[in-house]
Length: 345
Ligand code: AMP
Ligand code: MG
Image (cartoon, rainbow, N blue to C red):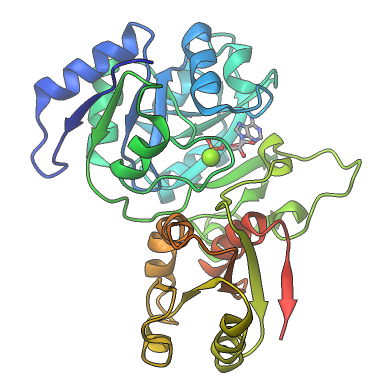
C-alpha cells in the first residue's frame, strides 16, 4: 500500500506550490491522478517506461491497451509524434479541448505507453489544473482514466479515491469534470479522419474541419469474434457497474411503465430523466438531467452508474440514447457498459 496524498487545487485560483509538488512526483517516476475537462486522468511521465508500467499495475489495465499522452500546447506534440497539416487544422478548431489525435510516434515514447503500437494518442486538455501540471512537469503526461480497469471513469476526486487510494502517490482534487465523458479519439488517414471513440467533440463538429469523417464500426457495434480493433481499447468491457446494466429501447413513457412493473418482481434501479422523477418518486432511480440536456446526461452518466451500484440492485435499467450529436458518445459508453444488452419494449 502506498500512502496516497490528496491535494485540493481550485482551478480558479491555482496553488502553484501544490502543482509543483505533484509535478515533482511525476518527474521522479510517480503516479498522480488529476482533473481534466473530460474525466480524471492517472498521470505519469510519458517518456518513462517504468512509470508507464506502474499505471497499468495500479489500474489492472491490460498492457496492450495504449495510453493517451497529454501535452500543454498542441505544438508540443512535435516532440513525441509526427504531425501533419490536418493535425494542426484539428488543433486550431478543438485544442485545447476534448479531442485526441492518433499520430505516428517518435522514439522518445516508449512501447510501454503505446501498447507496442507505432502510433501514439495525443491530447491537449483545456482544464487549467491539467495544463499547469503538464507545464510544471515539462514533459508529456501519459494518462488513462483514473479508475480501476473496467469500472466507470471517475468524474470527481471521490471516485478516484474510491478506486485508487493506496495504489498511487497523489490525487489532485480539482472538483467535478465539466464534460464527464472521455475525449473524442480520431485517427488521421491522409485527408480523412476516422472516429475511434465519440466524446465531447461531435461528428458534425469534426465535419466542419474535415470533409471526410468516418465512424469506426466498433463505436456502435460489438466487435466480431476475430475482428481486429482499430483501437485496442475497443475490445475490452468498459465503464461497467457491478450490477447488470440493461438498456431499454422504446418510448420514454414505456420505459417508466416498464420499470414500475419490473420493480414488482426484481430488485432493480433506473437511470432516468428529470422529467420522470414525479412518476418514479421514492423508487431506486437516479436522475441524469433533462431529456434534451445531453450535456448534463454526459456529465452525470458515470457518477450515476457508480451511484446505481450503491442501491445494491441486481439490474440497472437505462434509456437507450439516440445516436445523434453528443448522444453518440452516451450511446457508445452505455452500450459497452451494458455489454450490448438492449431490451426492446
Ligand atoms: P482511456 O485512457 O481509458 O481513455 O483509454 C484510451 C483509449 O485510447 C483506449 O481505448 C485506447 O485503445 C485508445 N488509444 C490510445 N492510443 C492509441 C493508438 N495509438 N491507436 C489507437 N487507439 C489508441
Ligand atoms: Mg478508461
